[in-house]
Length: 337
Image (cartoon, rainbow, N blue to C red):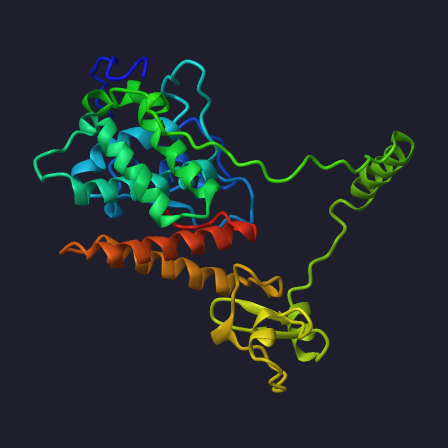
């Protein structure tokens, strides 16, 4: 540990309560800065700064952060969002989707910390190497087989160090990377793929054709909103809408069919659905809304008082992480953090 506990604490300028958190960010056509979230708001809605039309609801919901850590969390995420503030040397401001992901991980850390610390400890600068060692072990308990999830959680925590110039008395006193055992060694997963690449003589014409296809047909593909209804009236392929998932049933591949051991009913069993593993699952806007409502419900239970028993809290946090991972794997970034 070379630089452990070596950073001094410096005052950060107080932020105006009326400051627009998206000031300096490009906004969607039709969005006005004066209508966007202000620093004093409990919920920061970030959708106006997302250009992609498919993005729906991206919010930073600060009431889900323990009250004693809320001011510091607001300062951190205002710094991450607002290009008008000075960036630390070598740091670029993250995309909105990355900010939302970091917020979810920061909430996980601070909720855990709230249950560990005495009530009179309120400054994040009091985080110690021992705290982070325990949190690292907590992540291993929550996600024993998800290296990427644990890595994302640790990366979000380092924001307290990397953006400390904006945290004043709450800035972290040491870089977590200097802690023994903070970073995990990746296991070797098989040998490098030795398959020969396509020769340039083949790959070149393919790229030319692909680019021409994009240029020739850009903007000419008409989307028919009624087409899914017509497809669902057909029997092949079979489509079964559910509250949380929409099943495109293929008896030869569906995991629920295999689990029923030859039951010839001919319909998928949503009760035995394994959406994280089954490739016969798709999502409609209604499904996404249902998952998002479930995330909000879980957040409400985790933030409730009195504090939940540790095992129940762990189960809820694990379920939330699985839902977020599922939505992300299906191309959905609009997960409430």
